[in-house]
Length: 98
Image 1 (cartoon, rainbow, N blue to C red):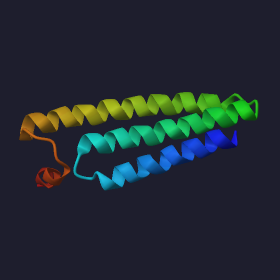
Image 2 (cartoon, rainbow, N blue to C red):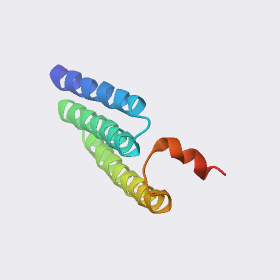
Image 3 (cartoon, rainbow, N blue to C red):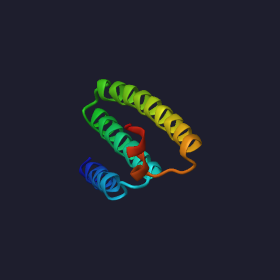
Image 4 (cartoon, helix red, strand yellow):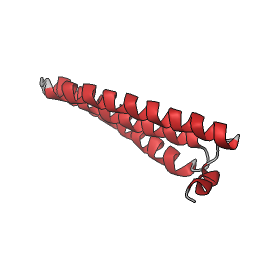
């Protein structure tokens, strides 16, 4: 179990850095956010199997549904923003505030 947790921790840190180092690219931020949610889901499932408990797998299932809804909303915002502005960049999102 330790090797799984270590592997998922490395993936979590790389996704965390991916979110903050690629702040200008909206698609990379969404991919990093999805990777964060999937890593947390995998940790729930591994610990659930290790402790022979069903609730971790159930929580992982609910987390997957939340991640699917989040990605659908994020991609719909991305398509709408691309149609309005003709490009995708987080630096141009300041134009939406006014």
